[in-house]
Image (cartoon, rainbow, N blue to C red):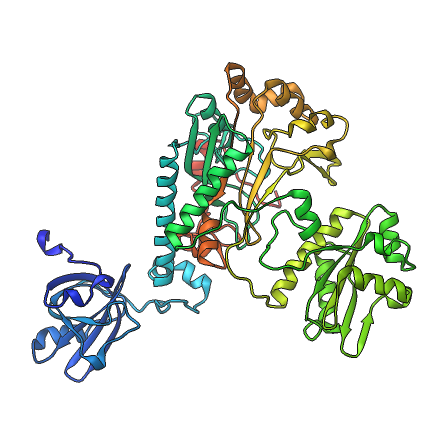
Length: 593
């Protein structure tokens, strides 16, 4: 069709300054509206909508052609841009001052009636929309999300390029490496019985890129984890990955902060104050019961352990005697919402997340009621109110546990649950660096110490003496970036001393032989002059989701999976031919077999 296909501009770009121009546009029919001898077609493309006008008196054949159009038909139209009359102007449309009087129309593709209406904020069943994702993606809100994501990606590449980073693609088919989640495995036809894995992250390759002398690496990296899904998790996701040589923690955080400031300023026009606040892991747990606290609201955890240690209430005294603690939250001005019935629901919630229950105090205008006052003296109850600062209208919720960490994490989950239940006003973008994570965490199931981050994370220099003697004291050169209660990024300074790396592997229960079998290519590389280095991975999907205020990653990923890790549009995963399996030397078995 050659020249005939030249597009003058996208539908949403026309303004009053274009009046009088002859133009050609392309798009989908959003709506057809006949009005006497006129037909108005709302034409939609990725940029917005534009009104096309067909006049029966000008061209009867063209008018009849327009009358036959249906929603989602694809067309191209040529005509003259003209100003709308004062009474027909639409201030809600960017192009609401103008319309195109059509002189030529070609239908490029007819549409059947779609299974749902293509409109913003569709209320249609999500499963139906995901089955027809190509139609769902026509909706302006989803298109805007994907286009915004593209802008964020471009800003990302520009920022890191300007700061001396080189984008290096790392392999998708790699050796299976334990990183905390299950690997997706890919069988090899050429090497029967052997498997590739899809990368959970480019961790080892980016470290090897530092040994190779590239100094500053970045990648918009695809990552894969075979784990259970939720609203902010997908089996395949995109990470803004970076690594830097000759750096310490401060250098990595400075680059991360510069990126956050740049991307929010350019993409949203939001000026994030710098530097970003920091908090140690220990402080975050003590104050918020979480290593990714939402600091848009207060309700900080209050330690009642000393206040109630000698009380007659066995729940409190028993928890403390067992080496645990007693912690409280104050839900301010919530006594009308947190009735006895609602508190019972909170008790069930706490038990559902592994807690033992809630002791409570309600401070009404009529006085105080409590689930445990009868076990306490008046002085002890007053001491609790003094310590918590609770006042009339407040509700005090108390968690006791023989495991101090469990008491804190239960409070943290209850705190977040209350924020939703009480419909607290949560606005803005509240960033926080969490630093100095524990190097080890004790796994109750295996009764062993495991790495909280990963085995290549460097311990703080002052903690090296505790590696064998007191693992619980060892802190790491590790940092997370948190935004509104969501972990956005995680990273660390890496171990580059081969002897220290061997020491860490042994402490994690790996013999020298096992460690070499799994990671020998990395430790071998460190024998040839490894620069000190560190980096982090920042979730692109989560970043965009948070910037746009979306509820789910599915709103910012073009072709997402659902909770059972399937893609409804293509109906994958799906069985494959037996012949394909035979070539790979694989046989499938049923549960019964």
